[in-house]
Image (tube, rainbow, N blue to C red; front, side, top):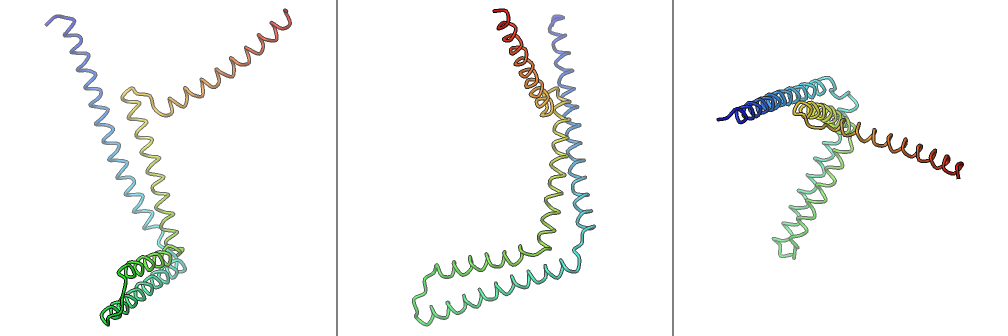
Length: 181
C-alpha cells in the first residue's frame, strides 16, 4: 500500500469515526428529548387536574354520550324486532343508526370544557416536543457538517440584503450616468 492510499484511508477512517460519534450523540439527544417529553407530559397531567366545574362538565358530557348510545341500542332492538315480525327492514338503517349515534356521542364529549382543556394540554406538549426535536435536528446536522435550517435562513437573508444593496447601487449609477449624459 503506497503512502497516498494510506493517507486516504486514515482520512476516511477519521471521517467515519466523526460521523459515528455524531450519530451516537444524536441518538442520545433523541432519547433525552423523548424522556423529557414524557416527563413534562406526566407533570402537565399531574399539575392540571380539572377543576370541579370542568369535571362536572366532563361527566355530563360522558353521561350524554351514554344516553345517545343507549337510545341507539333501543332503536336497533326495535328495528330488529320489526324485521323479525316480517317488516321489511333495510340493513343500511342499522348502519345509519350507529353512524348518527356516534356523531352525536362525539359531540356530547367533545363539547365539554374538560375535553377542550385536555386537548389544549396535549397540543402544548406536542408543540414543546416539536421545538425540542427541531433543536436536536439542527444540532445533529451541524455536528455532521451539513447546513441547518437556520444556516439556510441566514444565507437567504444575506441574499435579500445583497439584492437590496445592488438595486441601490444600480439606481445611483443610473442617476450618475443620466447626469453625465
